Length: 159
Ligand SMILES: [Zn+2]
Image 1 (cartoon, rainbow, N blue to C red):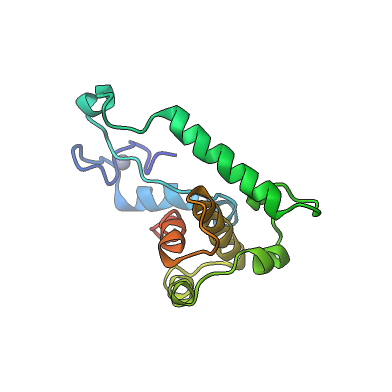
Image 2: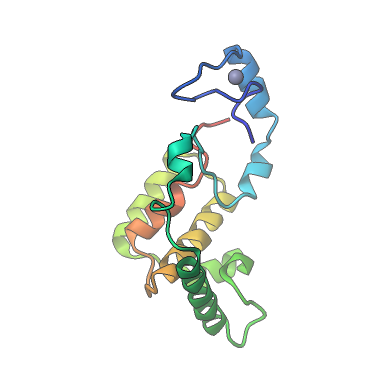
């Protein structure tokens, strides 16, 4: 989605022409329950042509695909004998069973819950995403940096 009707709210290079109340009204149109059902929010700022055209940046897609395939295999093994095939399908009960976080990550999770006013649904979504982030690097447990990455994909503005 655009951040505002003109599309430039928060843009470092071009000024937004919308009034603050218009921006607020626009952002509130996306309801909390809807936001709760989205796994990953990423702010995408304006990008220079030179950066987009430079092939040397970005990671090779074949390498990324391999990592995803490996993570999927790991998940199928985890859920063998259950009706599940991937992390996204976990219910809250299964999240408790399969998404154990390390003690240091526990306190981070607690702080994020409070500061970001997370709903129960968002909480479980973060844990599932953190589990997937850990799977992508073949880590057995969810460490604090996996969790921190998952948390940063929640929307930053409270709408
Ligand atoms: Zn605007």
